[in-house]
Image (cartoon, rainbow, N blue to C red; front, side, top):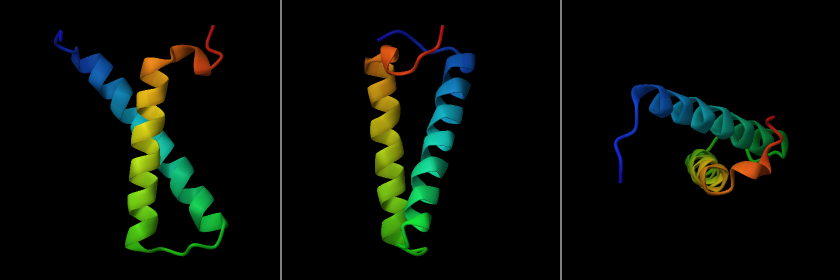
Length: 63
């Protein structure tokens, strides 16, 4: 596995944080409330989403 550049790590972190907030806000809107479980689900959801985007970069329409 090659070393990731600082720029790639920063981009990955920003993507992860954006995904986390999207999952967290959608759970808050659905009425789950602020609980540890909500944060945990949001973290797992964001991690899975970031992995999917890294494995399948064609999921987003960036051109």
